[in-house]
Length: 271
Image (cartoon, rainbow, N blue to C red; front, side, top):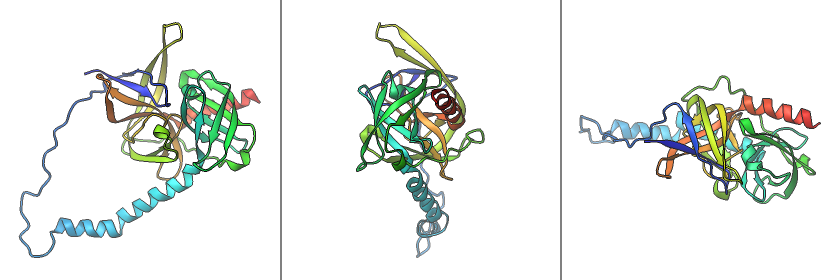
């Protein structure tokens, strides 16, 4: 079965091919009951262990960590709107620079930025766009002091199995979070887009992170965050199967090392 990807800015879906096999197949899940029935009069050992884990200990600590990360990073994730698309962005510095996907910005020269549901709408100008890696920077023209820069970590050390959260504005639901793991690293994507003249434009995005955290329309340009509260990637595409349906649990993000390197260059060039 073939596979493709869709970029995740609202109002724009782009089919993308994946270099390397990404096989989307159905799975059969076997029952997970114990082979030996519990014959005691009290609760089963499994039930007792689950009760302890949910009430205290490692599970309780992990839940608290999830909550702390969301509270710390979500204020740095904004919603970006242009005439053609709606997506997400991450506050990059105290000057009001915000990083996002190039396909969120498109051909616009300005955008509207909202930091939360009740926050004011700020106007931003496009500082620079680097389409080959799908990265762009916009800068608010006023109100930079109301924005909180995120803590960007290094993606070079990210490995498969690492727990991550995807923060953004999927389907217009401002300030949403989903969770998953890093499924693979080093994925290379080929994105195809129809131009105004009917031709096909192809963009290759190298070295992306594959994640099982749910990525939906509107997540583009948001934050893929580690449990230490560091932004390690920028969600940019979601998988769809050959029939056009969602490929659940297959999303892709641009590594933070790529995002910060390009953002620094765009900001430096713009002055």
